Length: 316
Ligand SMILES: NC(=O)c1ccc[n+]([C@@H]2O[C@H](COP(=O)([O-])OP(=O)(O)OC[C@H]3O[C@@H](n4cnc5c(N)ncnc54)[C@H](OP(=O)(O)O)[C@@H]3O)[C@@H](O)[C@H]2O)c1
Image (tube, rainbow, N blue to C red; front, side, top):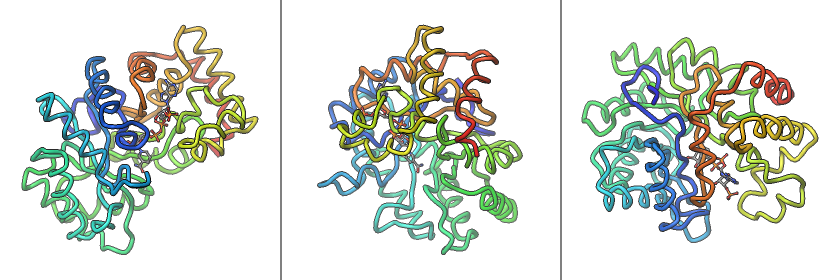
């Protein structure tokens, strides 16, 4: 288990992504994945109010509702660390005080709980004064509706502004950052965010840990990806000689450890400075063992160096 930044949140070092709930997994499949996740030692689940509004026929809130129904029927709310996010689902878009309080109430209702363990600003909102957002999130903490705060998709400069404003108001700082980060998407985190994260002791919970499935090694050609309607857009950028070069090194290291490529990709991510728990999702239970195995897999210094070198082009 690992602590999220300076908080007392004790989490399994692999967070289960919840954007598949109600998207590529229906409710029974999602609940089966959640059951298998906790049976394998997991406790940290990542959702957002907006998941999964992009599926035709959905309205948003499907992921939180499935997660809430699952916790209610299993009676395990106290054992699960629930992370969710606000700012992208109408009418609670942006980070005004009204969006934050309204969005939180709607999420609590769907989740069927009276508190959220980790509540993220899903994306920066430059149109709202940061002082207003900081105060509104703190109101939720003071009311006991949220235990800890996080930021997602923030720049280093805006994290710094948020911290200064929290200090000026004398309120709790965010404890977590959720950036886009994986072996084939390194530059944003490594060039600008990592230094800020380490300065403020933020716990990093990177998303797209598997690059939408590319880092499982299941797409070996453009044709493989084209046949997967839900995921083809997400992996298209990586179907290049550089991307396949990373897969080749993952293949070699996976064979040495007798595990899957996905486990190695997630173990590499967990080894990076600041990272507490990579997020990855599983559409069906058969995909989950590879994710769980990553949490206890330690790569050697030489293996990490090989992966760093193979993916160097993605760090620039
Ligand atoms: N903060 C943000 O802005 C933000 C943005 C995006 C995502 N997120 C979070 O990050 C999570 C992860 O994102 P994601 O699900 O899009 O991407 P991901 O974790 O990089 O990829 C997961 C997908 O890869 C495939 N997969 C997983 N394990 C596999 C295995 N063992 N073998 C073969 N395929 C496997 C599955 O998709 P298929 O079976 O469909 O191929 C699975 O849904 C989300 O659920 C969400 O919680 C946050």
